[in-house]
Length: 58
Figure (tube, helix red, strand yellow):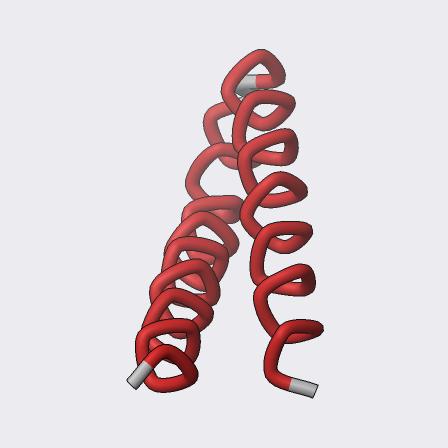
């Protein structure tokens, strides 16, 4: 079913965001600003995609 596929896509996007967010303490401790910026951009992209997919389920 299409709605179930969309739910699974949302779960995948949210999992990527959670994983990326869990990396921030290590990146901050290392003082790696370029990686922090890249990670922030990727998180924003995945959060936006998850939001758009959730809107299809509403």
